[in-house]
Amino acid sequence: MSAHRSYDMYVLRQFSGVGRLPIRVLLALSGAFSPEDITALTAAHEGVLHSLRLDRRDLAATLVAKRIIELARNGERNPVALRDAVLQSFRNDPGSSGL
Image (cartoon, rainbow, N blue to C red; front, side):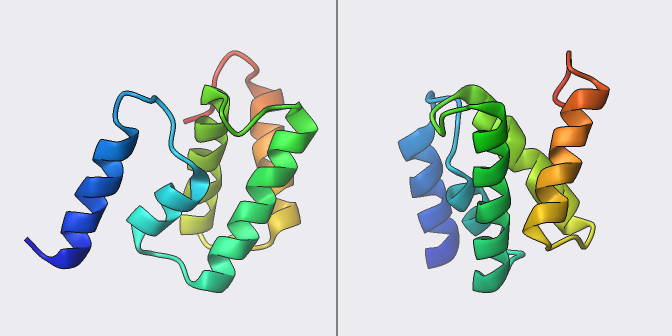
């Protein structure tokens, strides 16, 4: 097992059973984003949490993070656009995370 994969497994074990992962952990595990991307996606995440009055420890914060990552994988990197798209997805279907 590579050192990177071993570290990924360590991180997952640390958070197993918690039900939520900080966005930076999800982004690091994805391996698809540059440090600049991570800064932008983290800003978008914080913006959504603030708008929805959520705490990072809320389970919904993980759903927000996953939605941001999904949008970023489709090419969006602007934190304001990401924030707005995630908020809109929750407004369009308030009974679902949209995932």
